Image (spheres, rainbow, N blue to C red):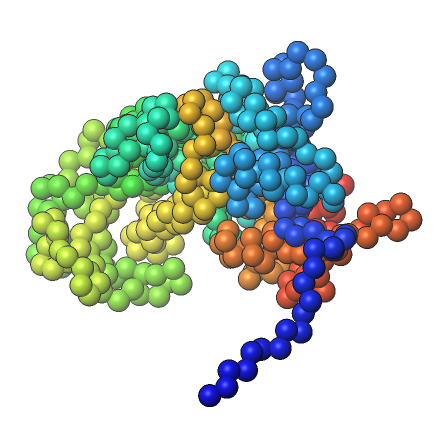
Length: 465
């Protein structure tokens, strides 16, 4: 039997000129300049220099954020990504300069100023077309995650509740269902043994998240016409102090609630009274095998803010799921509390339950953040890793704003997750040409999304006159 080798029709050599890979990373980097993110960070870090700088700190910060969005998970990787594209996007700082920005310049005193710089950039991005639809509530989703420390020598790394070792950051995302991924409002780096339901940490993250919103989009307890903001969390956020803080800031809340003996008694009462109503799915259709009911009058909620309601849900577990001791009659029972009054959300109880269930999208936001730098905290110092968290959040924002401004008419790009977005947009190849003293970036015409990328680039530039 003869084996016929495939014909080698392509000759390979290392003598190409005027080409660049990962050309789409320049889109994020340019957006960082257009929103003023790089200029704002430069302004807040200027006092960390004793003399003139070679590379502005804001430019280094923007390079870090763009490279993290492009897949770099450590500062050394950022230096390689940026250095490989100097011939098209300009000279970049050395890896040592990048390390110094994270390790020394963004310290505990300057971290709040960097957060304020990101807030200014968000306001500019929203003014340019990235703002949520007017008149609709804003939903802030708060959740924690574990970041494993594989070296066992990073500051404040500790055993976690999952028997691992690392850190336990608490994050806040603004839900943006029109794209895949939300806007990263705030993040608090915590020790690995930090409690899941620590009210003080939730309060801190909420206040940072509200401060990150543009001034005209923040809630105001003294202004009934102010924008509506609802804070969603799982049962870790269901503390009296956190609920009161939401109320004090003019924000509503929707928190998971533990299914304790009181809730189980309420379930029995509701079953006897046949007081369950069908649940609905995201399209408004009845959800098969799921029901909701209100138990506000069946459980004492006097210690919670006035107007707090308790809503229960029961659903048939998916095939193969193991029942818990809190489940009743073969049904999976969950509960949440909210201060949203009657008649506000379409669908009444079913609409409230659907709104709370959509908090689960924060898991996708965290998963995407872990695919863009959050899975690895590269520094030994705690404050330096906190600065790295801010870079990750800035990277998530740049991707979100790029989709919201540039790809609104291209849903297959606006709604794809970060790995797919990298493949289709950020990692695209292009050729560099120079003519009449003008540098041109020519995206590969055979690439399926070449026209959409070029159009998005022009739309973003036009949005910032």
